[in-house]
Image 1: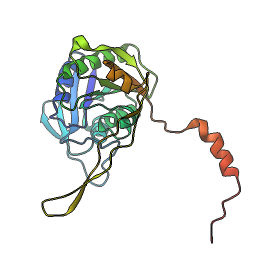
Image 2: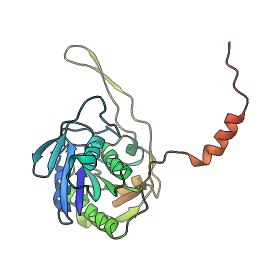
Image 3: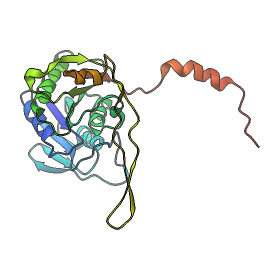
Image 4: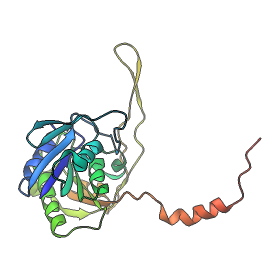
Length: 254
């Protein structure tokens, strides 16, 4: 089996190195990842300039682009062999609920899934994790399951693992995405040349962290496994919108 590993923390991140090493038990592993931290890049593609991937070590490519760029390049021709599966992570910090909309970790897996491959995004809940091996072992188990019992097409698994030793981790749970409160406000500051700068505020706490969510599972010590799809159509509203559009045209004020 040929396994493509990517992330958004960069090819030097401890998380991606631990993950790649553990996955070697299942097959040939190639890392194609950003050359620097690209957290929060979401599903962006670099279209305004060429990309320059560098083979920095055997089976390790560093790309001057986004996580989505990395996976797109790898599958569409950078690698001599098309991967059988895409695994993104291990992210330092959770990707729960609304985080999937912004996460470069999830975006890398999404690109693999959109190009027809099974895909897993995995995150450790701590920003300075101590138990990356626990998350890596969980991914090895999930990859084995996907190989033996594939999930429906275009299903992506978003996995969040508490930063706990193996003997304190509770069983995996199938969960739904929770929802966060809005992020805290922007932070205004001045740079050394007295120009105004802005920092994006921290992510909000869980607004929907009830039983069954990824938030609740991780808080209770479980590994959360959330099946994600990216058909963002609100199918239940199509009929109502059709009726709304059938109403007379709105008269604009003069």
